[in-house]
Amino acid sequence: FRRVLFRSISHPHALFLYSMSLNSLPIGIFDSGVGGLTVYRALHDRLPNEHFIYLGDTARVPYGTKSLATVERYAIENSQFLASLGIKMLVVACNTASALALPKIRENIGIDVVGVIGPGGRRAVELTRDSPNPKVGVIATEATVESRAYLEAVKRVSETTKVFQAGCPLFVSLAEEGWTHEAETRSIARRYLMDMKIFAPDALVLGCTHYPILRDVIQQTIGENVKLIDSGEATADEVVALLKEKGLENPN
Image 1 (tube, rainbow, N blue to C red):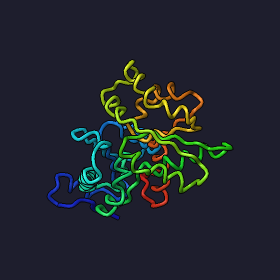
Image 2: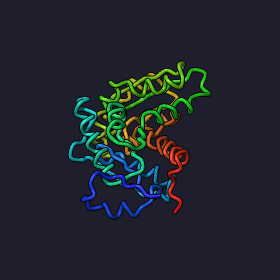
Image 3: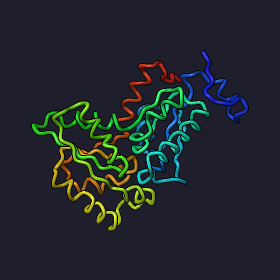
Image 4: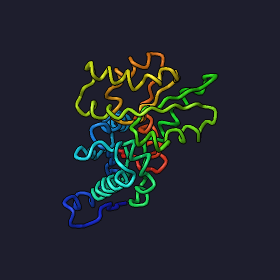
């Protein structure tokens, strides 16, 4: 069984893709920058037989401060480009794009698309289920917070779980620069997480794929007793399950 997932036979990868079975096609991943590599790492660890194509849109990072129309346009362009290379599944590693553009992406490409919001929200509920008064914190870009996507994702699974969100826009730039342990990073983290510490969540969703790069600083600031949820790791688990459900695993 063979299938071609590209738009033009003149594409430089066309002959290569034509010779590949659907199962052996790569999984496409895109993010606004380097943050989505945390999702790639989680996927690679769980799916060592799979091939991946990663697109980091570093020319236009960050997405979290841009308008809905702009994020949708960027996300559709990225998705169509990856689809043109021949992929069997698309992972939208960017939380902002997942929050604002997932329906539009699905309208524009004819393959399965997995975002990071739903898996992260479901994992948060799962990890706080035993708490008598479950509380989940979410830190994300301003656009993701304003979309209320994580709030809705949690509420779809649990009506009783309390959710508090905080925007941490500078975390993206700090992660892109590799400023993971500088004094300035610790100072910004204390400022951003001040109200979150008062809320005292049982678990904190790292609602941007850049944030796991700053995991140590965030954990030390919020407190060691708070469980940190990497939405990328939760997404990887769902991709594994979806590949198995669709029969798209690469056996080689």
